[in-house]
Length: 187
Image (cartoon, rainbow, N blue to C red):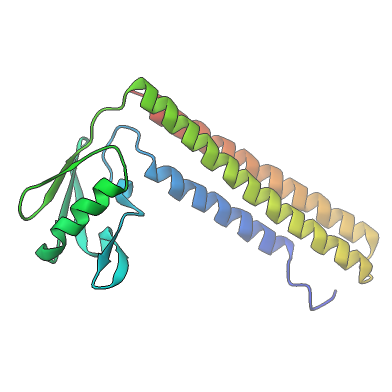
């Protein structure tokens, strides 16, 4: 086998696994009516000239299903965190209580739930596209192997294994989406 070609079935598997992991992380950001610290993932503040995630500047906790408490380690950034959360357009407004930000997570309306399901479906489709792109690259690599003298039956088996792997990961994406839809639509 040609040493220049590094893309193997294991690498395709790893790439597809990472695509599913990314999808799960993105879906955690979609709130399903319950407060969670992950809702604030991706919110960043300018912390002494560096764009920093707020979870690296504050303690984030959820004392109950309807509240998020953000307690910065450096009280001087409380206002910055407040503005960043509002600018992120997450659907809630933090209440500045001097030393902490208290965020009350409003219950989701039916319309908002449907919008979140649409977002979840979009994220799932993006995950499937990533998986298919990895399949395409793996299949191109298999064709290069064939040109480099690897027996045709081995290349065909590799392509079949790549397709089987793709089907498994697409199925995982569908299951993850189904669970998230139920979570979002449950009142």
